[in-house]
Length: 256
Image (cartoon, rainbow, N blue to C red):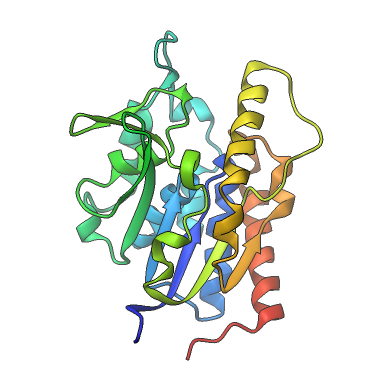
């Protein structure tokens, strides 16, 4: 029985480390590898949605370069989240040249968490930007996103590396994991403790997913950067590029 797609890619969550995804996509293009379907969680959903809409890896990097995190989010009085999401949704709407999943050039699956019912969900139809934001809406940091009466938060709570979402439909899956390791050092600030706590959760639910990849690319060097450090966009992009290039040279990935 033939699969629906020859090649799919799964993009993990990882905050600003997600720019490694854009670099990895650039390396894939140089090898003539263009995914026919994409799955993404959190930062992976953001980069994946932009790429699926037709933006080049370099353009994606440029959208974030020389910006600060407060260009995208607004501080709120702590009630259901430290930061609001309206500004980032507006940024997505103005940056992505389509409004719905159905208009994308490459089929996209975005993983979020149904916070009301405690389960993982996959979005692949309807309004795009709000669902992408829901996938990246880390609890405590951000107020949950309400869609059709249900509140959603970061997809990484149950599936930070969404390989299984597309596995059965693809002959080959390349998985890019930008949150592979726990750093030895960490901040004891509220933000630092929260980041480390979520990283434990994300790392735990990634173990099984990693085994489903035909080619697994882990950008270990990216773990030195903080979740919201936009000043390192160029460096992280290059790390993703080099990691993918090395993996493709080593494994000699070929599409039949």
